[in-house]
Length: 86
Image 1: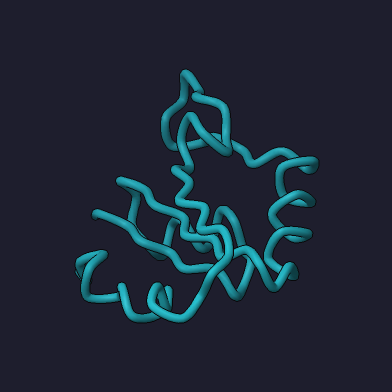
Image 2 (image 1 turned 90 degrees about the vertical axis):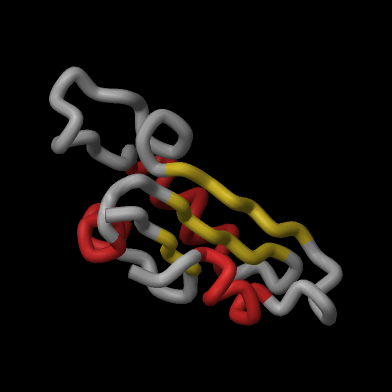
């Protein structure tokens, strides 16, 4: 498992002067679900992430207690930084 700070350089904090969004999957970009393993990212939220990832002034990091593999599978968008815990 990689620690968030080991991937810190990918965020390019020293040169980038835009907006960084650090978002959690469960309960932030995806509503909490009674079935913890099956929350679904809504179409409008997916579309919003898609639009934001193409903006040169925005960088997105998705952080979760889930594994990175699970997070990428559920979100499925490239060009984002994924950070998982398990």
